[in-house]
Image (cartoon, rainbow over all chains, first blue to last red; front, side, top):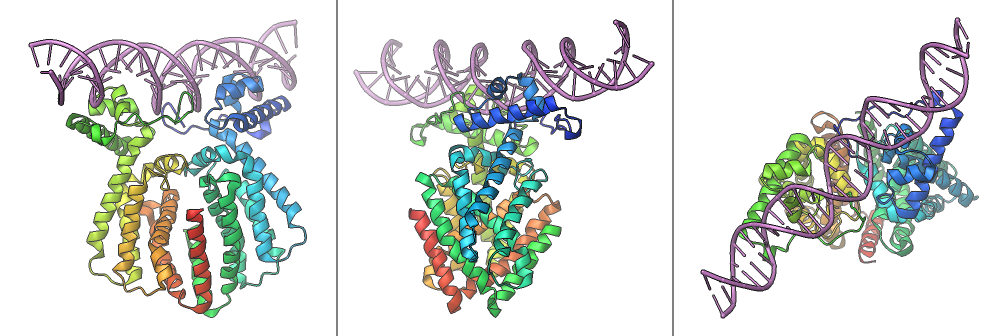
Amino acid sequence: MTTLAGVTKAAPTPPESTRSEKGEATRAAIAAAAQDLFMERGYDKTTMRAVAERAGVSLGNAYYYFASKEHLVQAFYDTVQRDHAAAVDQALGDATDFADRLRITLECWIDVAAPMRDFAGKFFKVAAEPTSPLSPFSEESAPAREASIGLYRRVVDGSDLKVPATIRSELPELLWLYQMGVVLFWVYDRSDDNKRARTLVRRSVPLVDKLIRLTRVPGVKGVAEDAIGLVRSLRTL
Amino acid sequence: MTTLAGVTKAAPTPPESTRSEKGEATRAAIAAAAQDLFMERGYDKTTMRAVAERAGVSLGNAYYYFASKEHLVQAFYDTVQRDHAAAVDQALGDATDFADRLRITLECWIDVAAPMRDFAGKFFKVAAEPTSPLSPFSEESAPAREASIGLYRRVVDGSDLKVPATIRSELPELLWLYQMGVVLFWVYDRSDDNKRARTLVRRSVPLVDKLIRLTRVPGVKGVAEDAIGLVRSLRTL
DNA sequence: GATCCTACTTGAACATGTTCAACTCTTGGC
DNA sequence: GCCAAGAGTTGAACATGTTCAAGTAGGATC
């Protein structure tokens, strides 16, 4: 973000409550233009001027609705999240095996995200900054994050998995972190058709599955519970 | 990176072999000016013009030696890596307990990196882009990466750790990945004196230690070896 | 209808990363 | 000493994200 004074300003975007229908439509047009251009040219080559022009508004107007170019990415983000949830709902069917459900969920992610492969790196770069509203850990992305974690709660709940309750309750969040890891790998993976990322999923899911089931073995259970305790304490610290 | 055409260009930086002493000195002056300014004002508020002025050269000249502002960060990167290695050498002393050695190494990282805490996020953002030369997985940072992995090889070799050879040989790289995870957490950790990151280290090291030792238990060993196999296959795919 | 308020809109201006054609200086060969 | 080649240097120009003072339009209040 190139800021004149380097000071983060209050978002000029008006609160939803005071937005008119006209404003809503304009906002949507800008977001749609941005999504189109991101797909056509990637993030860098999509200029704010081009977005404004395609949306049929002035440059300044685009900034009335979106505080920065980065904020235009959020809409994209939300779309992917929704598409993923829908794809998973469709693909899971009546699978009850935990490993199957987990694998399907991750494969759906790769399928849904595939069209964005080429510029996902740029998105990731933007999202990686801790202070960015697009950070997966940020306040602003809490809704998308919660939705994603909810997805993994359904993966667990709809399965035949048997694990201690203490671990089971933390599992959705840990699986979401696992997905973040897969996404990280996917972003760096330049292979055709995401072959390497798909291999990672296909081969790491059984490992994760085994590891989770191992938590019933006495010696391993203690370690797992310590890990859960650590995660909990870091969350509230 | 704001590029006119959006095309990555060949680095204008001349190869070391053809550089004169004068050029070397100028290059060093620019890097030093950049480091100073990064520390004083952070990444965003350090302009290329300010760097050039402080170094006593023209703006264009700065670009003769460094292909982009991001490239100025690499020098910083290398400094941290060297300082870390030195601090570890000093702090390890004659510790032979693996967990102790691992904990000390990670704590040294936090100590060395502490002064950069405030703008580390910006560095991270820059490094996060897969195509960036600053990416920890990039070709350009291979030397720093290898040095860092070497550090963990010494952590393992100087310890009393007993693990199967197949696992031991991959351990340095896996521990480096573990450090990347800690760094990731550290970047996002906004607590005073990096309390949360230090807690993560203090409490996760014993877990990692236990997990590694568990690889001698038959049921776990298989999973661990599958994991190693996966890492290997992804590396060469 | 006049007035005012506020959501909305505009484009010029700004800051800054980056490029480039032109220039100067150093060096090795004669 | 002279010259060519190439390293080193320069600042103006450019592209683009962002800001902002000024404007417009539509509705509420009188």
